[in-house]
Image 1 (cartoon, rainbow, N blue to C red):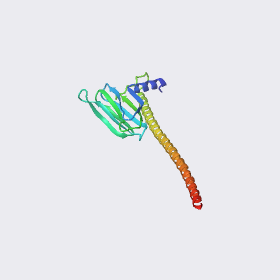
Image 2: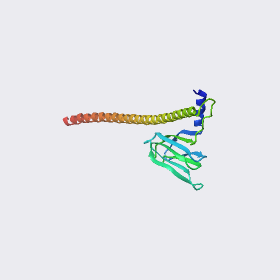
Image 3: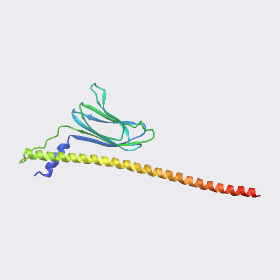
Length: 215
């Protein structure tokens, strides 16, 4: 059996080549904003996730740019319009700067709150250092177990993000419904007061007109 220190050492080696950036950003109407990451080795994996948490119809335009073959030029790797969320993984075939842009110019009055995460991972994984008395088969089994645990943790993290997004959208729908009910109640109350005043006016006019006819 392996000690806890050995397992922790393996886990640290497996994630040593992973860098991630998770942010929440509010885009005001007609705003464009870009975020950058630099790739110093071709073949690295880039994971890009985003979800619109609030604002309007919960949609946003996005584009991902990468370095082109010619110096100083960029190419569009992926793009989308009026997307609520996205979860992508692609291989960075060229060394250089990658740009992730969000565009809220389609919105005239509404802010958009966007959660996003950019993760860069090297393709090769570090190997576990050999320990006296441990066979390669045992090390391989422990490594596979830790990799499976890492994948399960990643799946749980994505599920949490999904449920958080659903919760925020449902809460926004509830607030919108409450606002509409409140406005409708005000309108209904105003109509009732106006109707009561009209009824009083009609009744007064009826008696006033009848008294004049009697005289």
